[in-house]
Length: 420
Ligand SMILES: [Zn+2]
Image (tube, rainbow, N blue to C red):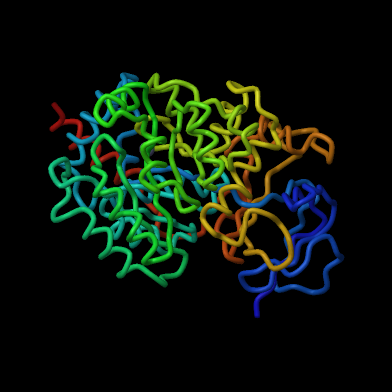
């Protein structure tokens, strides 16, 4: 058994009472063994006196395979965005997806994300690329109607092949995705939920992102997307729905009742002018909300702390609610036994410098406020995932990231040269 002791830190536990303690955290193999107590001997001792100890952040909506598109898409509306990105997808290569994935994984690990939920095709390539980096990956193979896809083969069949082939791999959890109701018929949505039930996993999709999506859907089916999902039996606790910008009150109540998880993407929604999700009202309706960055093409960072700050500010949310979205709420939606620092939970833990320029002074009274409003990705100095140190002193330990930004630069030059 290997043990790590994080000694004398300021621990933001995110337990049921949201306690903030001064003390130590002991990790045995991949699990938290004790919190708060004085520790005996350990294989590794991390002196945490000048750091905040926090559950690892969970980014609940990404497309890491698109990381090469950072800064390449103008801040036009979603329709123009999707046209541009699908143009890119049609020219995307396996090597570009691998490099994109590593760029995204690097940025997430360096800024405190310990798990992410991705939506894309070629999730097999993404799973192989992310393996060995230490990051915990939840990967949803995107399905859509055959007539709209750039995938080879039938998307829903590709999703099932991925679910079968990648079950049980360390740190990778496969699931099924849907691009959105604008390219998914009732039959496609139904097949995705059947797969999720069969493999006991989640359905990850875009939902009610733009006013246009809602109006077009209502025109075609006589119902708004979320109401239509409810009527067809698609609202459940398996559903993780990115955006949810345009919801009527009845739709919010339906989402709450079903136990579904909307994912707040405040920066991406602002970048594309999609609107501002009414998260304050969602919380009042007791909806279980999570938070995500979306891709670098519409964010342009995968630093979740930026979305937490921006999202808190534009909706005037309580910092504690936003921290819950990035930790306990996300873990619950993913059925991941993490998101809080309690004995028996998975050891996914990050340490933020509270003595540094960005967060000083930080104590028990203002820790949560400072995490949400003051911390920066670069405040994160240590990251432990599944009981293993993956980031130490701000430096990633995996060799997989060596030379990756140079490689991305070279590939991007080719991509730009051939762009329309
Ligand atoms: Zn998205």
